[in-house]
Length: 433
Image (tube, rainbow, N blue to C red):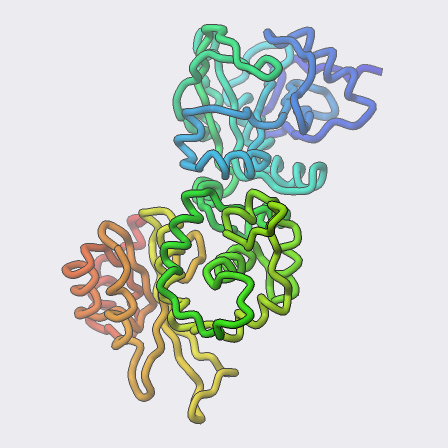
């Protein structure tokens, strides 16, 4: 039986509820969409979800979600991702391909209310139905028919216009009807997560395992590894040290922990990736994959301090150019040297979580003495450096601003009583930051 449809003129927007349709409601949902939406309905492309907005069991709106557009120049520029990352992470976007208020009178704020309720649950529902969460929602609006007012009211962002092409089989056909592209971040760091070449905890695990290098990335990595000393004897070398180290790095960045996991990751590599990692090539043209024992011996023999300096520089180039950098010190309780626990101070990206440099604090010295050697090698001009209250010092602030041409955001606590009192005197509680 078809569900009753409620005239929208009788709606109290605060009583509206949004839910996924049940299996036996699919035919009626499709019928109403075909009958009343100006584009009709043939199918929702790829993975999809169908929602209904209702009051007391009576339907008043339908919302359909599908897989994101394969290519969209304005959207891709706004995200800032490379073509490789776009291909890998496109499944973290969903397209609001249909939104229909069923026939009835107009009610202020109804459409934006329904959009807001849908967005609030969209990512969690996608996780349940399709196995992973979403980071970004998109939609296309025909400016000849709509102004996008309800999307603007629901805090969507207009990022530009399409070029007026539609995908047809394996090609694109010009139809001349350019549309406006609107996006809504479902995670506060959606752009940074999607555009970062490095894995992130919010990315699905299977996406992390699929990490690859482009030819340009591989060339940049090998250029930084070529000056490392090879601790191995000349006899018995089957694999180049640079190839082994590049392979280990990519495996670890992909989430592999330990030589066994690294070896398993290597076994899954494609021939193209083995070529980029410059693995040993056999007479028949195949690439030889390094064994677990070879990888384990390399990990045990390499000069870690020298490797860290080289890789920290390379990893630094892979993050966003304007990514803030945080300073933090940790004592390694399980790492004893001459009877004392080692204390390290690290600089790492706020969003990529990559440690771009770290130094050890000498015995009986403060972390403050480590700031300059820690930050000296890093290009920080125009970026923000954050630190805890220990580093809230005039000399540190002067060094960050004058020598590194950067900005700082330091915590103020009781170790700076005068500054803390001055800030309290500003009564900033009355003015949001």
